[in-house]
Image 1 (tube, one colour):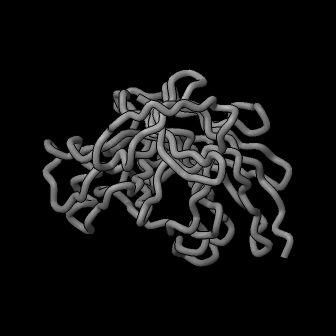
Image 2: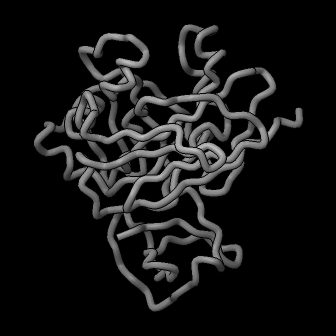
Length: 254
């Protein structure tokens, strides 16, 4: 099922998407899935980010093909970093190109959405803590990343964590095609079968470092083909059966 977070008539709520019809949920899907008798058409609502994470834990260099294109060795443990919750935007929201950067890149990724608190879970039990999956764009100011020698500023700008359009609960994450399009042209195409560390291994590793909370996002890494985007561009992450996450890049007016 496809869980969406939406705004309609000034109110925010969750729903289940079936084609172009949305059935409203009663309460929070991280607690239970309870349907109401209220329905909406997709064109009537604004899609919001499908969750409100306390944090985003992302992985660097987690595809064999990406490590190969960068001529870097495969890491001997997952390379994790944090993106702030204030970076989150949803479908059709604008990515703001910061005036302090001259090179901003797209990074299309499959993201995991956590269902319940996770602390020191074994890999064999890790999937019990997953609500579902969504599309993610780990937007990065590449020149600042190289300049700073660490990633907080380059990865942490407001609007640098595009997520959506839904949380897909019915997905086998071990064989999923991840695609990124820039202005309609295919730029990235990878398969999660090429992940260096699997999702259970990732959750196990992170949960031995920090507690994961309901709604937290794990961005599982980007495949090969990362590249630049500029104001005026439109970037789209496609993962079936999740759907398409499209955002436009705009200039910072500061």
